[in-house]
Length: 130
Image 1 (cartoon, rainbow, N blue to C red):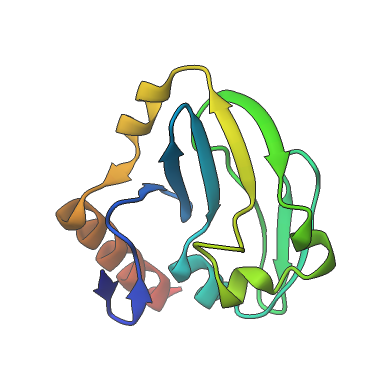
Image 2 (image 1 turned 90 degrees about the vertical axis):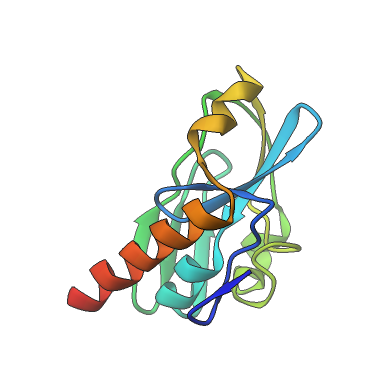
């Protein structure tokens, strides 16, 4: 769904620091959401095989794990071309695959159209003030 120019697929789960999570069986794929990648502008660096930092011309931040578990894989394409996140944040721009300790932990994330919209609108207002 689109909320004020941000693409926020409502089938995904979201962590409060603007990372999305997709459940694929017992594995979670995660990445940076559209709000975060637009706020960051041009992503120039994604560093770290484990949970990393992301750097853009406007922003430097940490990647937050959405759940506890084992990091299975990081996206090797992002080391060579971190701007994939800007071009396709929900597809080729995925960042990590995680095997959660408890798959039910995703239920603690933001999910569903109304919850996503409420959360994003609050963050849009918050970042307008900063």
